[in-house]
Amino acid sequence: MGVEVGAQAARGRALAVLRIRSRALAVALLPAAFAVVLLVGASTGHLVGPGWHAARWVVTPVAVLVLLAAAVIALVVARARPAVTPTVPIAEGQAPDLYRMVRDLADRLDVPAPSAIALTPDCDSWLEDRTHPSHGPPPSEDDDGLGGLRGGAMRGGPRRASVAPVLVIGSPFLWWMRVGELRAVLAPVVAGTGPSAHPDIAQARRFVRGLDAAVAVASTSGRCPGSRAVCAGIGWVARVLLRSCRDHATEMERGVAAAAAERAQAVDYGLRIVAQEQVGLAYAGWDRLLTRVALPAWRMGRWPSRLDAGVVAALTELSRRDRLAEGFASRLGERPACDLLEEPGAVDEATSLLAARLFHGGPAEPGPDWSPVDWQAYPEEVVDRKWRTDAARLHRVLDALGVRRTTEGAPPEADGPTLARVLEHLATPPASAVTGPPATGLPGTDLPATDLTARHGTPGQPPEPVEAPKPPKPPRAPYAAMAEDASLEDEDQETERSSALAAGLTAELAREEAATPAEQKASPAPGTTLLDTGALPLFPLQPPRTARELLTDHVTAMVCCAAMDTAGATPGLDWLDGPTLLIDGERAADLTPRVLSLIEDGDPVPLRAWLVESGIRPEKPVRLV
Image 1 (cartoon, helix red, strand yellow):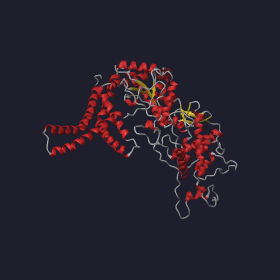
Image 2 (spheres, rainbow, N blue to C red):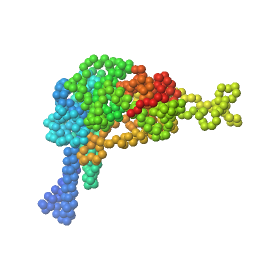
Image 3 (cartoon, rainbow, N blue to C red):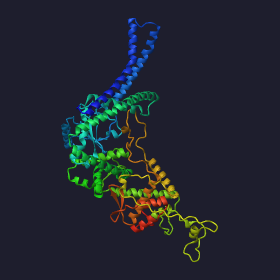
Image 4 (tube, rainbow, N blue to C red):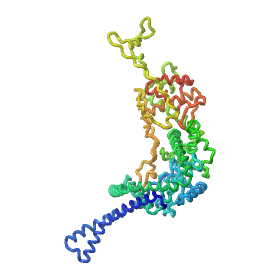
């Protein structure tokens, strides 16, 4: 370990963790020491008498029980499998240039080279220790890295000869960053192998990971009452030890990070400052791509097979539209870091499937109900199908609510699913539609009697104040949500009909999800983890949609279906906003505020005006799924 200040501080904290381990061992051996003293004293004739005899009979069984308990806890801590991040392993034959770059970087930093390289579908990079015996040997070249996700426990194997950790790289970095930028970003990460190789730090980390794994093992359900009691005791001891060394372990990791950053300052420091901007941009584009583009496809049973290539397209589109990102597009002429891979397409497909597994909980392997989709087929196979499926669900709920299919003024044969049916149901009835005889206007005026009553009041009563009409809500900027996806300024205001329809859609969607068979029904076996049992997604992207959001999505889908079937519109893909409607080749960006006006205020006028302007006929039936 180097002479960095952070490295010395990390070693001091590691020694503090090891002292806690030694104290726990001493506490476990203390009753045995007393028992040995009492037994030796009896054999030498010094500790004799009824009192010492009774003490020996009490202390000796307690010492044996404490030793057995300590042995069991130590065995669980040593054998419990620490959590491992699901990744896509990259063998050296799949990326010889990448391995060569990492080894050259380690030589320049004078630290051990990582033992292997793996990719994760996230915008982060770190070192991960996988030297535990339960992690098995290094994966073979034909392993896709998803064995732990397929429900099978990983085999135990001999401890690896190399103790260097595995370098985990975020896959979006490889596609968006240039080779020099990736090397600059990875320099502080690779420099962490130096402090990690120190025996004290390695032992302290191994002890903390073992305690964490022991807590996970003790928390596993599905055991018999006796096993649950034993596991409860093991979990309590492991939690006490974790709380005791938590602060020291945190400071130890901070010291390791500080030492790595200090050592990496000598390598590409100026370029690293520029590359950090690309890290933030890649994170924003990756999050946008997952939530707006990939998530709708996952919900339809399709998974985009080129997510990493998609983030490049999304960030390039942002560069084209945003003045602040104009300079980022000029970087695309340099060599991308994905060229360090022999088969970038196959690696992109593997990380895309893993992303769907982690963030959505999809199956681990493709199948009839879980098939890949490329970006060229996305509008037809995902967007069009999504809109028509939502529109069909909307009309099923309207049928359940008893809403008639034919609208006023429509011919009797037009009883198919129409947009006019939705508009008429959600529109708030005007004040003049009150039941009773029609009101007649007064002579010499053009206003009906109801308007005069509202303005001047009835005889003997003061006139009621006329409420000014609400100004229309200004549409949001197309990419204002890039910085703030959700605004809490507006409360969920809905009409009575909108609330009833939203509740019906929520119940219908819940029934459909309940009808879908779950992958994991049985109780997990002892010793298994979330990755083994398939309890995914581990990292859900978004909370469940609210009733208002569901209604907005379904009404928008119905409008898009009517536009495609009556006005020749086409489904499209916007890299930043996901599914979009194209009318005459132009993106319809002003549709959502008009749909919200119908849902929240019951005012169909803005939406009807937009339909007339776009040449969409709401009275025509549409094709549903």
